[in-house]
Image (cartoon, rainbow over all chains, first blue to last red; front, side, top):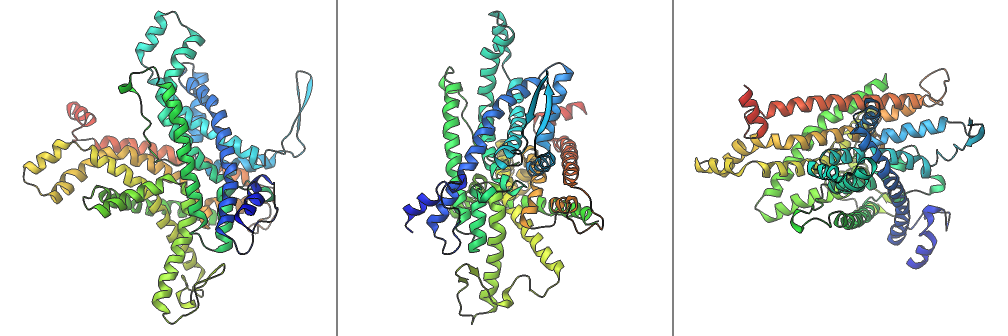
Length: 279
Length: 266
């Protein structure tokens, strides 16, 4: 099989398209590169969805944690503490076991006289269950980053907003929120990279890879087990992840430029990479 | 009973790994600061590679790589007249004498060996992070302190050990504290390395098909994992409090704002 044929056979294997059987004997480097790259689709899917949804919840959490009302502040504080204080790995396990216990058929409930049936059977599948966990987890981490930034919004900005008669939603949308994002962005970039790295945990933590449709690390481990040679598949994964990290940095850097566009050159915030966190 | 013992495994891992990672980190930081070029490059390469890649990749990679490396070295040393190639297709074959641990040794040694591999892997990965923190801390010590030391006629080595090292801990502590939290949260990954830790036992005892209990019981895994979650939450909370105390203790007598405030208050 030439490399092009391998690509056609396995490029979308992780989505269930193409050859069912994974290569068993005489595994070539090309097959490894293609299959691991195919698995990377899952990583991108998890990270993109969780980051996008998490962004909104994180903003809400930051505002809630900053609230003066005890009843709004406490839940946000607890949410952030629970998800930041415990290992993501355990969260995956717990969520999976909880989802398994839900009735298979779905839950019937009655809301305002209309009958609903909540479908629960997708929750034990990685594509939904793991995304929910990652979404909640990244919301907690980003919420803390945003909260820190929210506390650091300059006093002068707020006073100027008051002077212009901006209040409530308008003040938040036009003044507080953009400044908060600008201040939080470098930290948030790091968070995005860690989240991307954390997506590798999904298929090692209870969530089964249905029909061997797994992520990049799942295939890498498959090859390492099959060939008993870790020196090829793992460096391939590492290479893919370094590339993806660089892509994230580029994209977030562009957004950072846009957020800082009104400031004079010298006082712009550069994104400093501090890759010294895992979860 | 094994479930409780496995908490001991986790605590033992933390107790052994933390100093070892600190040692690796110190070595890495000193290497990165070195004026000898290859050593400096090695230090920088070590930290930047380990930090750019998901840690779990390293956990999966290093364990096999170290295992095969050790067996290969023993193979070279113990069986020089072994002619068959080591990699035969998809097999990794060394002579029986080079097997590590020996196939006839008791179960305990197999587990201990796996645990040792895990400790070394954790130390290598977290050493890279610690090295980054310590490198930053060494650069944060005020220049004037070092210059004063030189002015008093201290040699480079004396300046390093007597002035720089005692003072850098205050600057390193926030970063190291963070790292400690992350290390706590990385311990469940032991399970992936094939060690019978708390995650393993939680799955084993909670599952309805367990062989440990004589009587059948429904799926309790969710309660076991809930308990683990609470355990980790308590652990991080306690660590936070202890670290706060340590920061206060270390700031005493330092040329920083916190140290100055303490001096005034006293």
